[in-house]
Image 1 (cartoon, rainbow, N blue to C red):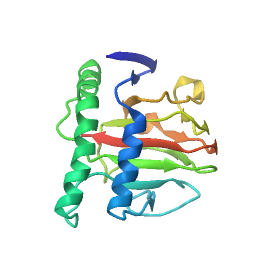
Image 2: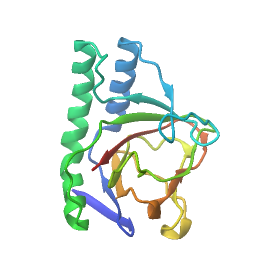
Image 3: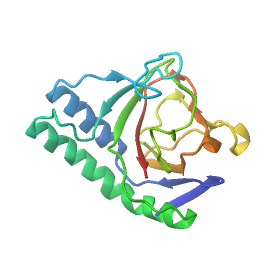
Length: 192
């Protein structure tokens, strides 16, 4: 497992998935079941496209899912869990986190001009400890990740087929800069 520490408690694990296949699987899922890409929400359901303008498909279980949709989502989720579970456990052990559970994966799409302004993943209503972002592609311009307090505020361009882990706390406030060309995909999850 190839890993690189790029900032204090900010770690990238590389070459863990076939990102192109994950993107194809997510699009096949959305097409087969007519899933709509929804606008990303912030702060317990608020939609503000000036803050978060990307689109999302939830890959986690939903009581309204048909049995077939559940099975298809579960296939993608299993691939992600198998690929990134060992990295998550390595990260948690290295930095002293006790992972009790994680949320379901969310597939995010940022098209030209879309972004996600500075935010914190942890809140009173979302008490996560570890943030995880999978990068299945890198064939786009812009869309870098930037930490407010770390890496000297330098924008970081994710590497395809990698995952970044970092604490979810306010100290790790971060953003996604606007995409200037192409489409940026990411798949997010959080551990508690």
